Length: 384
Image (cartoon, rainbow, N blue to C red; front, side, top):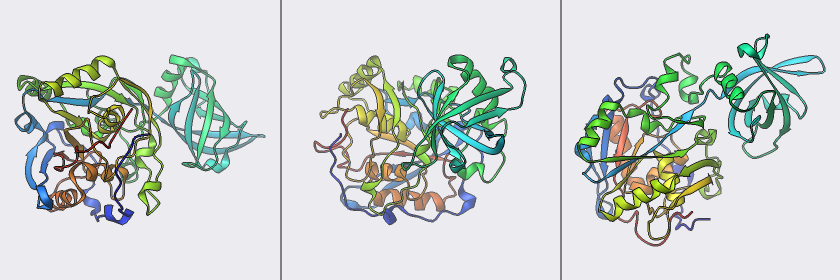
C-alpha cells in the first residue's frame, strides 16, 4: 500500500453550498468553449492567483515540452432495465454493470437489490430471438452483502463480442445522477458524454475533464510543442459514492482497473528528464499516475486495479499540473484537488467560480490547477 502523510480533516471541511442552477445539464458547444479557471496557489498560505480563460486557451497556458495525459476509457451502455422472474412471479429491476468477470459474467449494481437472490433469472429487452439483439437473459450467481450495497454477480446467456453487442443495443449510457434526475437522457448524450479519443470500453462514467478537448485544440497544442499520451482507467460507479464517515480516512475506495503501457511510462519519464511537466487531464489520470509512481517520481508500467485514495497530506510524485472539472461537495474528488492545490486555495477558487458564473460538475467548466508549493515534496506519496 502507498504510504501517506495524513492531515486531520473532517468531512465538513469539504462541504460547500452550490445553487442547483449552477449544475450544468448540457456541455458547452463547441467543447473547448468551456471556461477554464487557472489556479496558482500562493506560498505561505496567501490568496491564490486566479485567472479566467477558456479551455481553448490551454496552449498559451502550457509550455513547449509539457505532456498532457488523457484517459482513453470508453463509457459503455451499462444501464439495463428488465424484469426478474421467480416461480412465475415477475418484478421490475434495473442494473448497472461495472466490472467484467469473464466472457459471460459481470458484476453489477441492482435496484432494488432486495428483490434478487442467487438463481433468479433476469430478462432484458423485448421477446424475440437474440439474432436481432431484442432480448438478453442473465442468471443471478450471487448477491453481495454489505460493501457498496446492491451488488450482484450475473451470468448472461451470451458471451464475448456478441454479449457486448447485445449490451450496446439494449443498454443505456449512464449519466451522473445529478443530471439524469433533472432531465431525460437523449441521443445527444451518447456523443456528448464520451471523449473524442475514447477507445477502450469499460467505464460507467466518463473522465469528464477530457470532454473539453477537440481536434482543433489538439492541433493547436501540437503546434505549441505539447505532447499527448494516453492511459486507461475504467471509471466505476464508486466515483459517485458519498463519503459517509466524518473520519475521511475510514472511507473505502472502490477498486478500478487501469493500465499504463511500458512505452507510455517511458515517454512520460522522458518528458520529466527533459524538463517538461506532466499534465494530468482529470482526477482519474492523476490517481493512476500516482498509483504507478515510484519514490523518486519515475512512472512504472502498470496493469491492474487501484483503490488509491488521495486526500490532504498526500505527496504527489508524478503529476505536475491538473486539469479537472468542479466537483461535488464532500466528495473524494474534491479531497483530491484539495490535496493537490491546498484546501484553502480550492475553497477560494470555488468561491470565485460561483461568483463568476462558472458551470459545475460533469458537463460543466474546468480549472487548470497548479500544485501547492509543498505538494510534491518529501518521500511520501504514491507507489505501485
